[in-house]
Image (cartoon, rainbow, N blue to C red; front, side, top):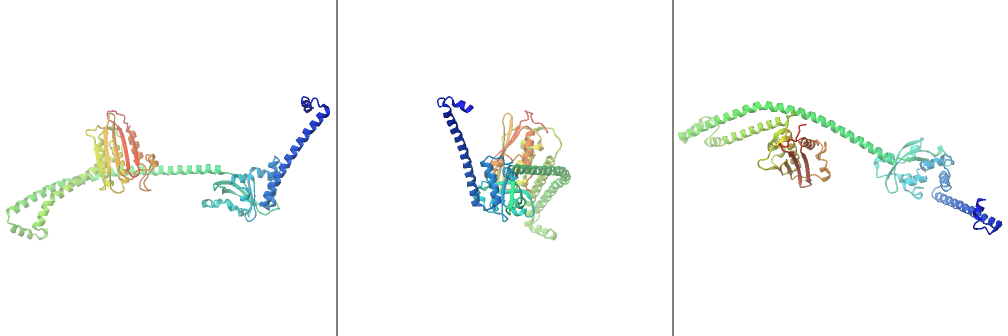
Length: 486
């Protein structure tokens, strides 16, 4: 009635027979439309089934394809079609024959893999194996895993573009659900994202474990270094006593030798040369003649002088070592930076040897800074050792210092191998090192930066690979009083 009332306006002059004819025509057109839709759907079903049948002779695979196509074309609720339809709808499904040749793949699996029916049907399942990743070989799809019953596990496959994806798969023989075909059926869910997240978590745990191991190593190293410092201070104290009397005895021996040399020279002037030669030959045990005696008289002052210099150097090293190993809490005081550099150069002498030249450029009358002499000496020694190790053969280290109204500036430059830009930002991180394993702990620069920051200053670096590295230290002057002991 509503339809007829709606037609009363435009078709009011047609009468009841005309209205009936128009409404019948509309109904007929609607029926024809739905019949056409059904026909097209039926043709699509037949076409898709025909395409599938041309690729696979599996009757069970045809049944799965029939369920899938009908549900899609006729918008049917797959739950009504039974468990097979629900499996096809909710999982990635693949079937193979007993040899592993693919006989069916649902749309979900095709969408995940990127393959078409014509790419998979009739091909062996190893087409999905990522053979360029042999580390995942135990996770490749292999239907024989279900010969003894149901198998479940994570499967790694490659898509049509060569990428990897992961599926949590169930695999069991087709005989469990049908008598039509022999073979196997896979069904599973995409876990690629979950797998990636798990790998990230696993890597994070490994990184954390590595950091913990590094911290444990650092603590052990710190304990060893603390013990070594205590031992070094004790040894230095013990060495001081014998060095003191060796030095005193050497000075007395030098005085004795000088006196004896004067006596011999006076004797030679007062005795005839022939008689002096005869006198020299009387004492056979001396094994001396006039020529060798002249060499002894001429050479002994230089020998005594060099020996005295060596002893003084040993005493300076011992004093520096005692000063360097001093690890007690100390109040900061005005410090001569040039003196700290001298201590560092003396301690780092084993690294410099004769292959590295050290050039110092200090402005005259530089003011003092407020801080710890031992800690600043440690910083300079770390920088000098690093610079020397960066120079592979022969090279030069330049130490420059100047001051402005508020800050003391010191730079340590070398012409070594330099540091890559991607590593330069990490050199002050604890445990980071560019040296081979066993050659460094990665703590020297981190500790140095910490010491400078505790002095109220800053430590930075700039480098060009192949040209060298330059470290810049900025410290507050003593007048500012901004430094504070840790």
